Amino acid sequence: GIQVEQSPPDLILQEGANSTLRCNFSDSVNNLQWFHQNPWGQLINLFYIPSGTKQNGRLSATTVATERYSLLYISSSQTTDSGVYFCAPRRYSGNTPLVFGKGTRLSVIA
Amino acid sequence: DSGVTQTPKHLITATGQRVTLRCSPRSGDLSVYWYQQSLDQGLQFLIQYYNGEERAKGNILERFSAQQFPDLHSELNLSSLELGDSALYFCASSGGTEEGVPYEQYFGPGTRLTVT
Image (cartoon, each protein chain N blue to C red):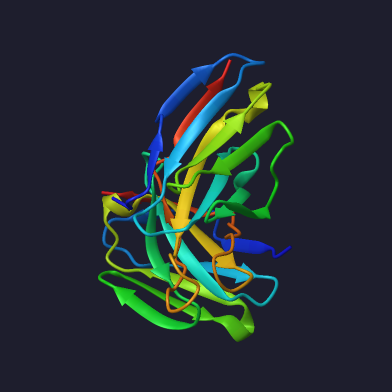
């Protein structure tokens, strides 16, 4: 099956700093989602992004499917951004399962 | 709020027991997925149902089973529980039709299972 690698595994930021999280995948994918798992365990949808760039407030994501990677940018980080960020590509089209990476654990300190 | 509901939120049980986790998908979503999140295995896909029928199987143990009912809610049954089954179990749902819907998956809040 498809392999998903996320880097870095852990990241500590000062409040207000910017960061880039990377997701590499081993095979071609039909689509990709980014999630934020907050400290209470809830998985929150951030982006649904098969290719190109999307922005939502301080967050943006870029997927280059032909080169098999996706990036998540967090600007002006806040303590509420803390948690684990997961990349989850989908190998096939339609209603098919996601494959999750191990995540990047982000801690933003005041 | 994702629109996906799961009950119960927490479950504590003993080894050897059987439990049932319940999930109601977002309104209109026909597909339901079950995922397990454990410390050693990460987030893994277990099984998927689409409009009442099994659609895909992942790393689901034979002791585990699931079904989707006519009202589209789903149940995950875990039996002969072992300590290693302690995990966070998520349900997700996605698109109501095969055409023109982006198939984005939305996750419920999860059921935290502790086996003692």
